Length: 322
Ligand SMILES: Cc1cc2nc3c(=O)[nH]c(=O)nc-3n(C[C@H](O)[C@H](O)[C@H](O)COP(=O)(O)O)c2cc1C
Image (cartoon, rainbow, N blue to C red):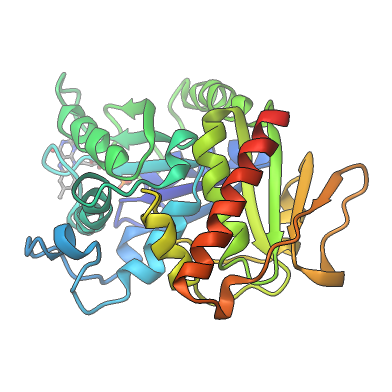
C-alpha cells in the first residue's frame, strides 16, 4: 500500500517538512511504501484556465506534469496534503500543482470517467501557521476538500497547528507525536485488515491493469487490489485506456510497475497471473490462479474489447468468491 505526500513549504527542513516526516515515519512502521514530493522542486507551468482539459481530458500546456505527477496520485492509497499557511492560503508553488489537478477534475466530472482507485483512497491534511487566529485553516481546509475530491480521495482528517513559526517549533509541540500516532492507527489499520488480490501480466500495460481497475470498482473498499508486470512497459496500452473509458473507468495515467517491487512491500492473499510465462511470481503460502487470456498488445480495438469483457466476468466471479 502506498502513501503519497505533497510538501507545500518552500522552506528547507521547515515545520511542514517536520510534520509530514513524522506521518511518513508512522506509515513506514505500518508497512506502507511512501513517497514525498516537494512542491518547490518543480517548475511546472500554472493552469491558464483554457478549459481544453474539459473537452479532451488532457492538458495542452507543454510540460511533463501529467506524465510525471499524475501516476503518483493514481497509485496512491493515501494522499497527504501538507502545507504552511501563507496569507491564509497555500504558498504559490503548491497552488500551481493543485490547480493543475483540474485535468483530473475534468475527466471525472465533465468526461464522466472515474478512477476506480477512488473507492479506497483517503486524503489527509497537515498544516502549520504562525498565528492563533480562529479561522487560520478555514481556507486551506476548503481547498483541501475540493483537491481531494478531484483526486478521488475521501478527505478523512486533518491535523493543523497554530503558533508554529520558527524552524524547529513543530518538533517541540507537546502532543504532535501522539496525534500522528493516533491518526496513523485510524487510517492505516483498515488497509491492513483487508485481503489483497495481486494481478500480474507481462507488461502491466493491458490485462492486469484492466483486471485491477474492474476489481477496485467492484470490490470498492472491501479488498486491496494491486497489479504489476514481469517486464513492465514504459506506458499503459492506449487501446486498454480507450476500452476502459468506454466502461466509464479511467486508467490513463497509471504507470506500469514491476512485480519484484510489489512483492518486496506486500504479501498478497491471491495472485492472478495472465501470461507472464515462467517468470510469474512465487510467494510461499499464497494461492495462485492462472487466467489464460491473450495479450492485447497487437490486437485490434474490437479484440481488446472482447478481452476486456472476458476479464470483467472473471473479476466479478473472483471478487464474489472471496
Ligand atoms: C509569505 C508568508 C506568509 C505567511 N502568512 C501567514 C498567515 O497568513 N498566517 C499565519 O499564521 N502564518 C503565516 N506565515 C507563517 C508561516 O505559516 C509559519 O512560519 C510556518 O511555520 C512556516 O512553515 P514552514 O517552516 O513549513 O515553511 C507566513 C509566512 C510567510 C513566509
